[in-house]
Length: 201
Image 1 (cartoon, one colour):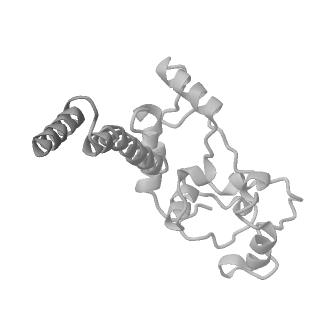
Image 2 (spheres, one colour):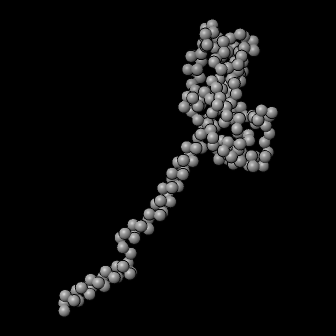
Image 3 (tube, one colour):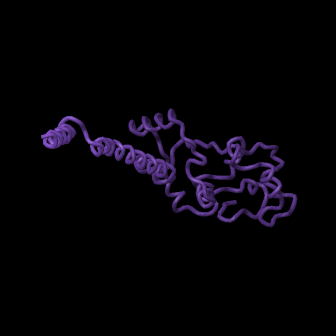
């Protein structure tokens, strides 16, 4: 009789676990779906971050006016600063550091079609931010090194240095170094110097 009671209690315990209390397996299973969702969100976030740093992000939505800019990076040539920077392992965000307010403003301008382009498709007026202050910021170009390494540049006489010119710093980096078009040696407005490969002038 005692044996029957014990087996009956075991059945009740088993039935109770099945009916009223979740098993250990079901406790584990309730975290599977949220875990998968979190993992997918993380992977998508990482993927978006990588895409956001690539040129194709810029014209994925804003085809007009970003196409010519992306084209200059992906199919540009030596002598275009953006192309040269990409070849050196940089990306768009190395120079175009995104600010949320600026990006929201750009989206609003694009969606309202409130921008103008010139006959070649470039934004007009274009924003030229290639100043010495910008280019020589921390982690980018060291102007002391740039100056010391460009005396007698491109086989010119030793006294010529476009980064230490008699213009007394009246020129900014962007006057010569063009990001998305061919760079121009402004010195040759007066002189006849050898220009770097791919440059005009």
